[in-house]
Image 1 (spheres, helix red, strand yellow):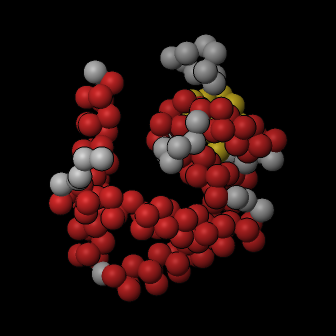
Image 2: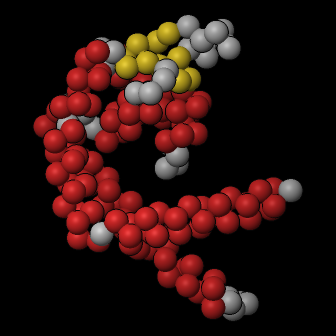
Length: 155
């Protein structure tokens, strides 16, 4: 088995903590959404539409985190059933409707603001703006490098 470079070892050592961080973010989202009859997935998909209505495929691309278009479609259907979102015609594509939040959906997201702000303020204060900005930048660079590598492999 070929050995990795020191940089490869460093990246590999980052993978498990990154998965743990993702799990922690999901646990925090569960804590924030549970009292509001939402789930992290419902919040994530609804939140993607707050600025502008979007088709399911675009929500799946933006939300990322491995959610397939079919999973986003199921979540979107639940949001519509609960009257937190609605389907709108898409002038760019007849079959790909746009998902848009309803007033009730916007209220559901707004109702979680205090809990989300308290969590973000407490966790953010423990690290500080400078470290968090540096971490965000580094994460973006890792994502870009990984995507570039995968694109090159697809060829």
